[in-house]
Length: 279
Image: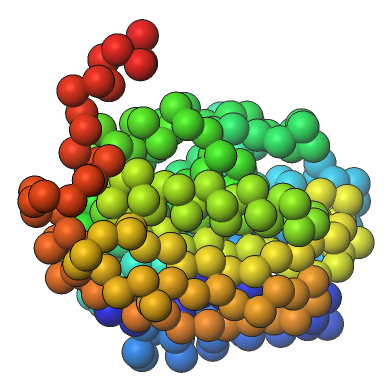
């Protein structure tokens, strides 16, 4: 299975909203000709602040309205009746007069919305999400875990109970330490949950205070088991400005094979102590 991960750069923004939309729609249209999974970074939709006037609170609302009333319907037309998993990074979503930092995921011909659960100190305008949405894609139990959520042991325990096979992680970090935290925790999740994890970081500079400076490198992490070819683990180049699209190959048969019980130590099978440590 081919997976395309996009490190979207806010430094390279088109001049107009029409051009921005056209570039994104064209890019997705091209990617889905070969890729089955496409992942964009957290808060890349905040790049739309370049095209909406007013203070940040007004821009949140304008971006949310544009995303859900205009952009998603146009992308929907591209994806209908195609067995594609698209994670459109994340951005503001307005629900009952509350703002959420939300990933829109296209799967099984519908949109699934995953709200970020653990907010950073500077996400003061957003409400915290309350649940992790699990969904199936081509025989895999999948989830979207947004940036800081990847660093939470309690959420990892929940995903272990759910038997997750695939995690998509849209991310936005301001420096190497932040990117290290997300990627190193993502690598741990791959080992302890027996799953594949993809991380897509936001990069570039923006006039928007929420995403003024962003840098990082993509990560593709796999469990360390006999059924896994460890050489498949990859990173993209580290970037703070460059728009990076990188393709990875995910062997879904491998994911099924490694979860067969055998003589290896496999942490995702050790469920007998969950009740002790979760009290």
